[in-house]
Amino acid sequence: MTRSRLVPYLQATFAVLLWGASFVATKVALRYLAPDALVWLRFGMGLALLGLTMLARRQFELPGRNDLAYFALLGLIGITFHQWLQSNGLVTAQATTGSWIVATSPIFIALLGWLALKEKLSAFQILGIGVAVLGVLLVVSRGDLRALVGGRAATTGDFLMMVSAPNWAVFSILSRRGLKQHPAARMMFYVMAFGWGFTTLLFLLNPQFAAMRQMPWDGWIGVIFLGVFCSGLAYIFWYDALKSIPASQVGVFLYIEPLVTVAVAWAVLGERLTWASLIGGAVTLTGIWMVNRLKPAPRDEKVEGAV
Image (cartoon, rainbow, N blue to C red; front, side):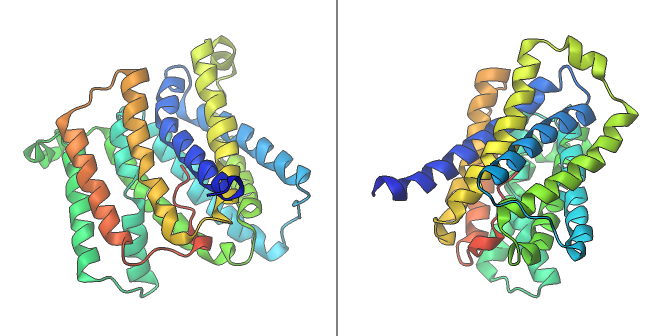
């Protein structure tokens, strides 16, 4: 493989590595900041970097009037609400648990495609959905499925993360129309702009400027990593890579994300590597592979990897 052909694969790998580590960085930053303040800082940084990149590449264009409501809806669902779920969820959920749950978003995308778009599901794919659900239940219950009765095993954060996976699926399905009409990076800039605007309203209810001034260096490292790298560079590299990587190969990169979270959470947060997490995660990835194996998504619909 020549250097020019290798670059997109390195970009996609780098983006997924960053998104995998984002769950851990969020846990670190949440030690010092409320979720709304963290999301506001993170996407303010990411939005600025995306905007500067588009200006440097001379790709900036004002959206059409007919697109404003559409971008606002996507921003509300995919940025404001999605990140509210994840940031509040990670207050009590483990980073590894949250990552395994969020990894099931392609399952919900397939289900929504079947329900709303009349896309067909084979018996093998339906079996894969069941396998993925079993894997998530193993992770959330810490290997004791009986403990799920009455919610004794799962935390409030686990349930919030469970909502974030189908919410991202809704965002992905709604994004399909726009991705056929607009360059992905430019569309994501406006979606993020609206989402950050809505998040600003939540942030102003509890600004936390004092907490920001007093936040120690590890908290700021977490925030800057999330804003500059996860919400800025990762999006840029991901969408650049998708221009060159065949759609049938894109899903392979997304399988790496929860594995990165497991490794980084163990190294940084000291989260234990339990058999339930490893086996449940393996079962989850197997189910996702079964669903995606027969029907890879077109390249212009691949927004599932973002977090």
